[in-house]
Length: 232
Image 1 (cartoon, rainbow, N blue to C red):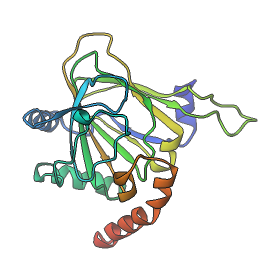
Image 2: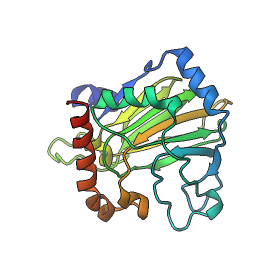
Image 3: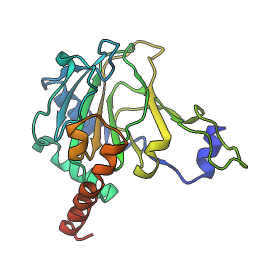
Image 4: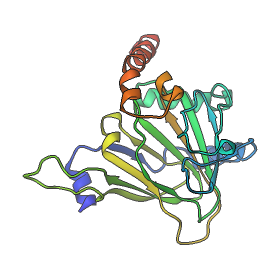
């Protein structure tokens, strides 16, 4: 059902399997592997299965996450990524103030289904091992007379190759969960680069409806400033 539905409705995402040429993707992947990534978990009950590094503002952790797994910002977005960062901003005509890198170690690494509730698009570039990534509907279809999907139905389900781009548009990120299941076959590390815009309210405290409301004016002002500077 989900594949046919994706073709009929206006897409809530953009998926580009060959966004980066193979050589360029491999160079970025190799460079990331030289960086001092730190173990991280966003869960309060599980040991980490990935490590991370983040440039730009750092989103607040849940209060129950152990201190040794709370990774702070490593400073501004590095020059090594400035060209790629500009390409992402131009593509979506929007500014992003943070890039988070998550390196999942092997086939046992997974990302449990969740929603990133924040302002703006969520842009993810995949590098290294190809892994399955799944987006599901978070709620039942509001058009009850059509009943096109139920909460938990799959919206997107693909193996993401190295160099692929997957973006969840801002207007629909609240309606989809995303997850990366454990791989069925042994594999090496898979790394994702994730672009977001984090407002000060998201940095200062746990993400919730109030922090989103508090950050609306800041987010809007940042986007308007970027467009003025780029004559958009």
